[in-house]
Length: 299
Image 1 (spheres, rainbow, N blue to C red):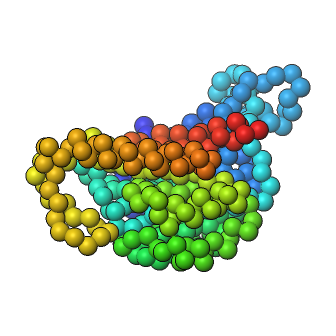
Image 2: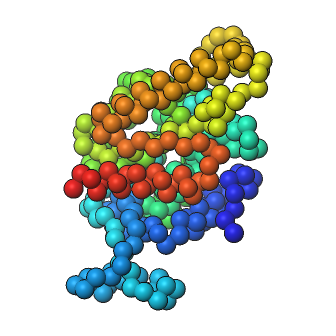
Image 3: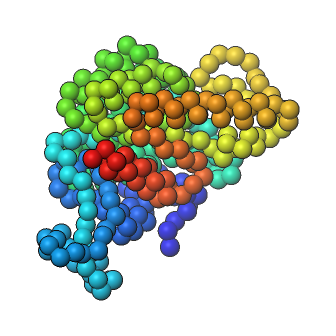
């Protein structure tokens, strides 16, 4: 039985969480085994006359008693870059599931993408935005690189604000080669230095894929009435959310995230949205399929 998000949140062992999540993806999604696949996935399809026998999945044949062909994109020399927003707002916890917050969810999803890239033989690296600065792990291949990236993900703490635009721009030197960017954030700041950097990368023809993370309480405005809140990334006093404030909060929140989605469409950036209370497997599958759909439509 697949562990729940609440169960997985009880362990700090990212290796264990990765194994559970990737096992839960099932046979419907396949990670390509050739180098440079760029973490592309697609579903199996039935065998048709003329297909190469080497592409038949023999293990699936044993289970299903039918021939299926693995379909996977093949891009040469594409590096995978994981971007983690570890600013203070990512410490926002779930009000429904103890032990998880936005940062835990973002860290977990990106760790799974790193593991998939490693299995495919892709080069992959990590960018962590936290405390007004950027921590950069250069791209490399192999199991040791996976352990380096997982260690950096585990170390990330929700601190401060996003780095300034000049700081981010100075770290875009890796973008000289074709790259796929998997970026996990709450994108409460938009436009921001991060959004401008990502749009710049897209204009440079890199493949940019965003995952916006929210809590169910943020979506529903189901915060406890009268509770006090302080913006963790800006100076200021306490704010109290009354029942009368909820409609205004919902309207402003909807307008903000509609603007994020529109900006992504205009920049041809893949944009997925998830609540951290959702199963990690479900969110990962949806994010990867959204990216694959954009790739298929562009051909």
